[in-house]
Image 1 (tube, one colour):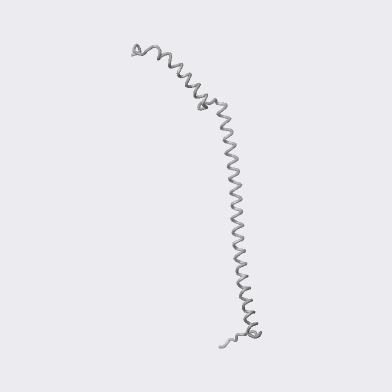
Image 2 (cartoon, rainbow, N blue to C red):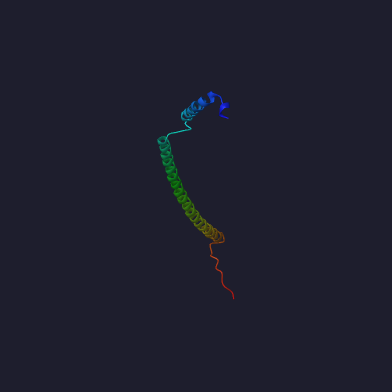
Length: 109
């Protein structure tokens, strides 16, 4: 079986393997352990920064939601006060237009 393989195939295998390794290193598909460790370190630092920014945004969003809830409650209180004030002012105008006398309701029973 080995007798049928040409001699150049036996020489081409180590040469082609060496060329493939050089090509992989040159195209940055194959890196050294030190380079890999450095890349992992940089990516871990970047991930930590992203997580820190995410937490800051979450706390800011929670504060904004709380503030919006407080504003909505305050606005509803103001609206109730405005309705009451409008009712009082319209009653005063009606009484003033009717001669200035206050209408008193008597309970009949």
